[in-house]
Image 1 (tube, rainbow over the protein chains, first blue to last red):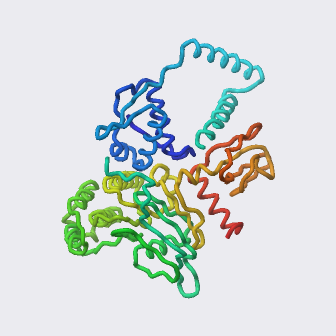
Image 2: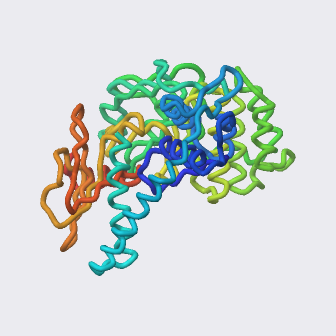
Length: 129
Length: 289
């Protein structure tokens, strides 16, 4: 997988890497047993500092998603289980209901987008610590 | 991969204590104190005339300090802003020169850098473009296998593609050798993920210094309706107002849980650029000068 750093984001670079691995897991690009690129590979391909990559891998290890095997690399331990379809359906239904309400209140797509981003942004702020 | 130095293993690569340097009556650097941990890639940032080049020159041993002390662990290489090469030397001559002058010399490493950037070895340095001359200066510095590499504006005069390539190569060398890098730059927006340590200079004094993530993580940017005060406690680094909206960059009090801000306020983590610009702006206005 290839990492990118969005330099216009205030999210620390290592958390951006963590997020990208989680995303790859969620989307099935990475699965249990797969090896993450070596630190040196990431440095060479993405122009990211080795300390940043190590910090990201350590964070992933702490959350139990990957494990470092001595001399062999860092491997995916657990998949990010796709959410229960029933839960997904329920969430979607509530979101659709919410969007309908927002539309009735006169919000345009951009307004809804801004609102969602601001709420998501709050969560982001917390995860940065 | 295993040679990459883990951050926080305790060793200090560069140390400054009460460092001061004066040109006649004017202090270019004053009361500068920091400890740069080994293996870090530190960005030295500040406005023009803030003392960056003076600090680098003192750390490199090219200038003597007028007060305090500076020390670096191990061998130091310094590439100054003008990327010095001898105009009448060929690139191959420069390599021989590097081999002769340095106690430790890694010819293969220097050649690898030159090959990577397609620098012809038989060409006289004076006939190379500015960007290529810079690559020769970098190759010499890398070839000397420094423990501490000081780079004054390494990315100036390089096109965007070369900037990205030089950065990636440099970080590769860091990962491989575990050396410590201190680089000064104005291109703050390109530092995220590249540097992991920040030294911020203003008017010859160190305004902030430390782990980048920790520094930024201690600050929040709030945007909301026009207000004289931010929605949460903390030191206001920067406040900007329009008729209807206010934006604050706030340094959160240490050791307290992160405040939860609700209502019309949107909080986001500041980018390195937000942070640096706010700090420099504050000193320019004389708030904390």
